[in-house]
Image 1 (cartoon, helix red, strand yellow):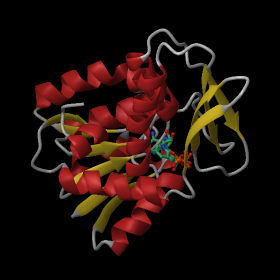
Image 2 (cartoon, helix red, strand yellow; image 1 turned 180 degrees about the vertical axis):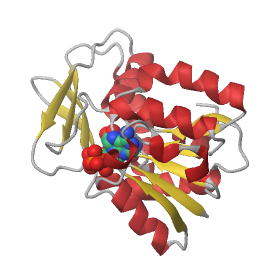
Image 3 (tube, helix red, strand yellow; image 1 turned 60 degrees about the horizontal axis):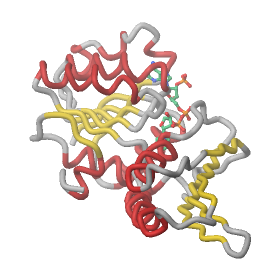
Length: 232
Ligand SMILES: NC(=O)c1ccc[n+]([C@@H]2O[C@H](COP(=O)([O-])OP(=O)(O)OC[C@H]3O[C@@H](n4cnc5c(N)ncnc54)[C@H](OP(=O)(O)O)[C@@H]3O)[C@@H](O)[C@H]2O)c1
């Protein structure tokens, strides 16, 4: 496939490396400096692109997605910190008959961790004596906090145990690729469920699988829906 990589930072570069290894062609690479007014995403620039992968920053994602969907390009986005605007984008995708797949986290391991977390929270619902909390740790350059994955984790566990708050603590330090922990602590014991990303390879692999899956589909999809279907 001929891919456009929108955002050529840590994630864009990891995706580019893996895409070349998998035999894809990189037809376009766009960084912030190339795209001040969205000029790098004019329809002419996107001619011949099969799928775009958008990993930029919270304040750039919406404009980029509007342009990509407007130009009819199936798009995978992993940018976090803009999901409150998802209904607007969903409307546009519907109007244009486009295709967009999004995820706060493209690691399959994280998607399984989220399901295990909900199962644990369900089993502990109504049991007094445990304090529940979420801790997420990322590198110092991450712009949004809490992470999109921590917010998704909290939504999931609160759905099965609305009586608990699940407060989130965020750590920004060094080069940590991404660690998420769900804790239930009592004076006598701690239950800790944790996902540790060791690099960006798992995110890049999931995003590329999504890019390979998306053409031929129409509508708004989450990575979870791609992996597990629409039933939860
Ligand atoms: N879903 C997942 O699995 C996952 C995993 C990791 C990270 N993320 C998210 O992905 C996003 C990117 O993360 P990262 O670590 O790669 O960040 P990063 O290293 O800071 O890279 C961001 C890139 O976006 C570019 N950019 C900024 N504004 C742009 C615009 N308007 N148009 C095109 N490119 C633009 C930047 O270019 P300049 O440097 O020239 O400004 C830079 O190349 C973040 O939101 C992060 O939270 C998601």
